[in-house]
Length: 226
Image (cartoon, rainbow, N blue to C red):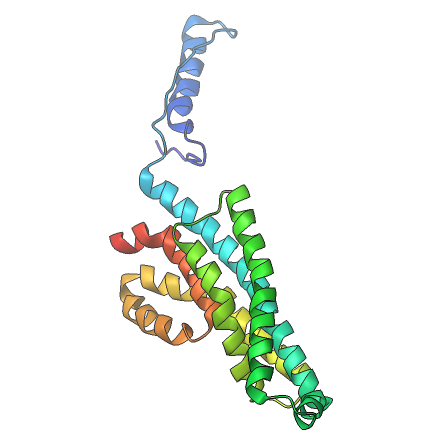
């Protein structure tokens, strides 16, 4: 006899034979109201399954954080190129403004503004219990790295619109998608070496470092087992 069981429920292994025995006893006693009760106390979920569930939640969280982090350099590069397109920077320079002072003041202002969403993210992670170990350090370092990244990126474009689209696409693809792809490659033994190599290349994008840190912090146990 072949039996097909849906093991989605943890209680099915105990309840399935209970239904069989109850049907047999109903027939044997000729009592259609006969009931055969069973008590089951299933074991708790194994540690490895809990870790996999935690890692799966981190994938979703890292993807959403990656979208948010991609918007920060988009705003930064927009103001830099807009001043360049409208010759506002040139006007300030011929009026006697020091070039070092221009970049220093912009850097301080942009880093300060970038800390606003990062502090909100830190606060929300504590409220909703998604504070992965050590990731708060990446949140605090991110504004310094992303501002410099956006400034360097701005020199490759002359149009405000094209720069915004490109920098958002790069940050979203690398931090939101490739972070998940790389960690998946690292978990699989056959592709672990490829994942380890790609990780260092994508670290050139600051937002990737944050999302990769989120996933790595939640998946470290699985990576150790792999």
